[in-house]
Image (tube, rainbow, N blue to C red; front, side, top):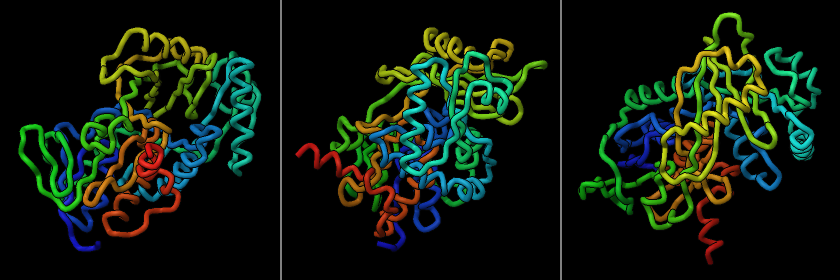
Length: 364
């Protein structure tokens, strides 16, 4: 189908905004969300790092993320946001952490991915802000990072300029030909796209149990005079616990992220903040001298196998949800997949494994 359609995109995070903006070039698009450009997308760290997120058994996710990363420079240029290109350091603080990173390096090498193994002193030479507790690590030169909040602001502006209608009402259900609103009214459409993040499962019976909220706290800090700033994005293992630090131009540092099952509770808790600070200070000893500007929590959209759900649920109903930690990274390819499906074309081959039909086959 290639004629102009009426499309409703349910959800205004980075996925919904990217999809709506892409579709608006050819279709009449309404984005349904009472508070677009907030939630998990607003508090995300902004790492575009499929390699350091990779793990044996998740090859399909690595391939999908790598394909999307290739699209990011052109996507960022079109949106008008700069990319940070210094790459990612993966750091280990003890022998068990180092063994995990060695396993990751071997896995990536078997997939033909570029990584460099470095000792602790070599890592500190590459980034003097790192602490002496770091035992060893990897440096991944191809990873990128982006200022998520600037990205979201630009996507909202571009979507409006492209003609996307922003509707502040909320959806209760999605069915072929209409989105049912929480007040009982319906919003007619030719195609509906479910991109409501952690809330997506409630909108269609085919998604029941396939998308869930995964809570994560994140802190924003500010470099103060006399502090040696971090140069690279750092993903560290601290006694098997994950912590990441993403420097921003202008002296901001994004620190995250806890990850645990807490339903739809999005309140920041003291224990989460404490754990982040304790672990991060072992990676970055100068952290105690930073200014603390924000504590926030978001609900990532987890899936059963860490792959998103990208595809058709039934005629006239598409899903783009379940991106978990990779919503920012996968925004360009998700928009490409949805645009292809709306046009009646085949989506990129790298996205085939993310078809939601995989779960229907498992249930049978």
